[in-house]
Image 1 (cartoon, rainbow, N blue to C red):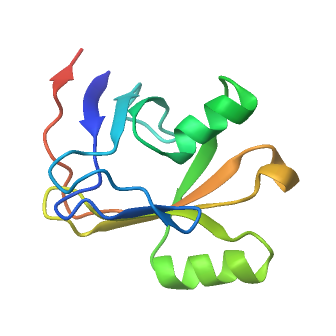
Image 2 (image 1 turned 90 degrees about the vertical axis):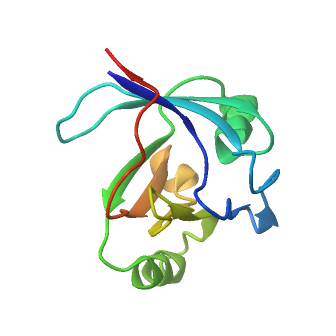
Length: 134
């Protein structure tokens, strides 16, 4: 298991339901996450710690449980446009994550249709070091 405090990268930019979800560029929007395996599919445990996030919103509205499924995509712009055209707007966008800030992700509002959110991930070239590994 790998674990780390999750932020939104070098510039800390993120948006949630069209609002700025950023607390400060030097203070990541508080999430604690653990990746439970190194295979595909990859399982994560995510805990909102402080500040606004779609994870905190989900817990408040629905309680604990399955939140999202993520897909690696080649083009974040094209994927979010296709999801929005299908009636599933992006409710959170995360930019500039990864070791050099070149990653991006967007959560689409598929909760009514699927019972969970869909995350599109344009992965960074390299992730930062983890806080610890078990």
